Amino acid sequence: MKICCLLTGRGNNSLKDKNVLDVLGHPVLYYGANACVKAEVFDHFYCSSDDEKILNASKKLGYKSIIRPLELGAPTAQHIDCIMHALKVMKEEDDYVPDILCVLLANNVTVTSTMVRDCVNELKDNYDILSSVCPVYCDNDHHPLRCKKVDEKGNLVSYTGEVCKSTNRQDLPKCYFLSHNIWVINTKKLLAGEKGDMPWSFLGKNVKPYVIDESIDIHDELDLIKAAYWIKYNYKD
Image 1 (cartoon, rainbow, N blue to C red):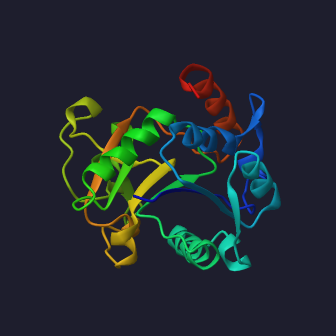
Image 2: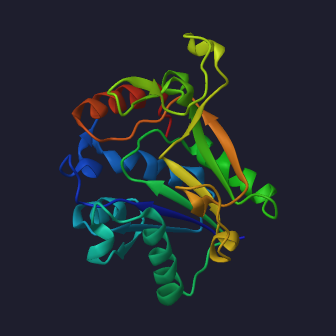
Image 3: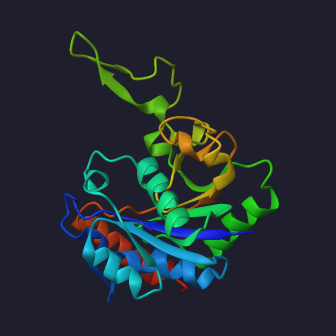
């Protein structure tokens, strides 16, 4: 079975050069990229980006560069378009079509080799059934039943219209959010056009969750501090 890691990141961000900013001696993208190498489950490594700094940093870890067209480097670009472009380049340049594609997001450090192996092996073992395996984290503080919106009178009302009977988050059913660190995708189902729930419909109809404690996307300087703390106490690679 062909199993590929695709590191994705663009250069045009609100926090300048966020994917290559230094955290404890390494660029942000290093931690996930290195964890995927250490997982020893991939036969190919690629990096899709419009940014030379990102491509150069990933090359040091053995990732082959896929240069995105300008429109895929814009803030409005959709991840699925970057993924499909990368798969097209892999086929045209290397005659390579992976069975499993692990999409690794460059601005998230909360990745370990154990996590990567577990997700890849789960999809391998259930390849005919699952469309993807993705890390998720529980966050009842931001549960949809607690969300509010402002109505036409300017008052706060329930966002969903459903009744939330308790102010205690512990009393609510568990609410999971998709982590933006890795998405392990069944490429056969993706290329066949299978679609699941929006907005990540490209993950397909049968998405197996892999529960983790937390996920840290780098969007501002405070996130860099959180990332450093997580790396110090959790990163084993």
